[in-house]
Image 1 (tube, rainbow, N blue to C red):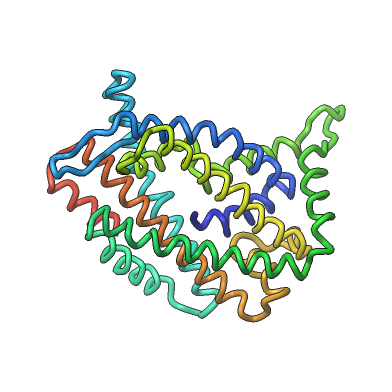
Image 2: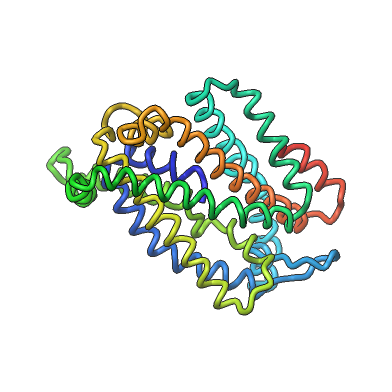
Length: 318
């Protein structure tokens, strides 16, 4: 779970219309297949590091499964770069925007605070990250889950229209030229699938790196957890956020991102909505940043065994 569940869904609706949610969910069902395969292979081709810890991921099954170590190195290099963008800057920017909007906090100070917080957690290693996330993620999920059901309970009479809007928009054609260009479908499809991948990481190759460190009972059982991740993240959590936004009637108000989600929640929660979204975004972002820090570290360890390079990455990341 990450900021995509809050910010990404709102952006998808604004950019691609309500129909983007249909394609987001549709892509999730296909993504379950991809995620299952990724996770299974990550566990199947695990290796043990010098410190005794298990490692896995696309770079290892490319190397040992396909016999293509250079392709594995290419993936590791790209994933390492992505940890700075998708895994760090996007997340911290979402938090700083939300906290500035809710409490007027200075963005620079928020960024420094997150760096200190995440740095203190990450320097404890993978076990420390796992201990923090296993406590943080269930709490934040239930926290956000409960708020969504509260809002939808108040707007229960608007749910049928919201579902109708999603399906109508997903297959609506906009005439252009001779009426042969399905512009609306193309836009909804593009933004629905791209934002869906951003939230559940299916096919991205990053999440299998975390699964590759697990002392799994079997690759198949671990792969089933990959399926569950995609289902709960996109089909459940993203759909709840989308329904909150659509039942509020504000999806075409000109707002976007966290501001749109906040406005939708504020119809029921009132003035506390901005604080709720800010805190939720903080929880979601911190867990995502910790995860991506681990992804980047594993990719760097695949590319270089020198401890100096890991320290340089830590300094650059934080």
